[in-house]
Amino acid sequence: MIPEFDRFVEAIYRPLPATARINTLKTDRDRLLCRLEGGGVACRPFAWYPSGIRLQTEKPGNLVENLMGHIHLQEEISMVSPVVLDPRPGERVLDLCAAPGSKTTQIAMMMENRGLLVANDPANGRVASLRSNCEKAGAINVAVTRYDGRRFPAQKFDRVLVDGPCTGQGMARKDQKVLGRWSLKRSLGLQRLQAALLKRGVEVAKPGGTVVYSTCTFAPEENEGVVSRVLDQVRGLSLQEVSVPNLKGSPGLSIWGGSLFGDEMKRCARYYPHKNDTGGFFVAKLVKE
Amino acid sequence: MAEIMGSRFGIPPEAFEGVSFFLRGRNVWAFSLPQVPDLDFEAVGLRFLSVRGRIPKPTTYALQLFGGFATKNAVDLSIEEARVFIAGERQQLSAPVEDGYVVVSHGGDVLGCGLYSRGELISQLPKERRIEEKEIESFREGCGR
Image (cartoon, rainbow over all chains, first blue to last red):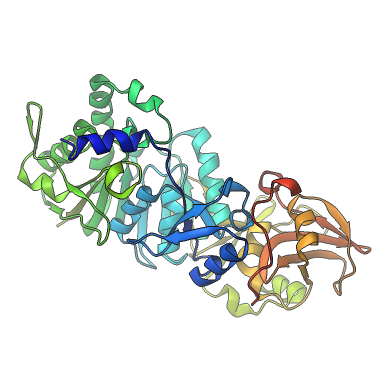
């Protein structure tokens, strides 16, 4: 399943580089880079995303730029799903599984603080961090809700992000324990929840609307398995090619174990840690007819 | 709301174009739409101003977003003064501002809200955002405006 498996194994035992997103709601890129350089912090923008930077500093959380909300500390690869979602200023957007809000605040920034972004998360404890991150980002177009995502009320959105709860294998570089906790049973249990969330996400999208499904795990049961299940259940959905220039992705799997997901799953993207020196990730893009 | 921010900080009304304000409890919230959505929500927009006290108090997050437009009751701190402010402490400071809440910046970038009273500047940074002076990372001169 994973290309260059030796390099993959080696990569997941290395800690992640410190990365951040420049928050253009509060500053601009040149000014922020000037500030960091002036403070002696070496930083390098990502090749694939101009708002993302790698930082060389001991405690990025203690940078004044972080206090001011000019940067948001965020893992590089998690910035990819809002980029694929491609929200525009003035639209109505739903982030169905929003906490702790890294992607929410990235979406608010891409919307230039205009339109409506509903950030939903049912978990009481996690909503506090979501609200705190939205405040720090200076997001004024966000409404925070706490519905069970599977039963989100009938509304119509231009774009929906379903960044589902998952077994988090792609986070192994941050916390090795995630690998020990994984089991097929957990993946299959989550698959039901993930598919129900994605299905609801699709239902509340307008005709012509875009729905992006992402996870930070490698398990096909939680990725292609979920997308193919929803495609089977819901008519009038098309699976679009995910391709981000200058970011090395691998195609989704058409077959895994005894399951045949279908050739179209190759349009999804898998991101492996050794390809871009990031965490691991999966992204699928659906468009409703 | 634009009037309050205009009379206290000289922020031009254009800065709040497309921003609506709602009073909920003892706080004023800034939001991108004139109507709150028809949903059962926890929060809408950004907590902008507290009307709990005798005089309205802008939040640090509101000033970080709009304080850059202030033309009065704003102080730009030296690096040493800024470190004290970031740590959440009070300091003696002679500044051409009126007593009350002020926009506090360093090198043209807004740090947050301060309370100026009788020659003393008291940091109003939320406790969870403060950074102890010895813990502040790589902080030197700003980049000017």
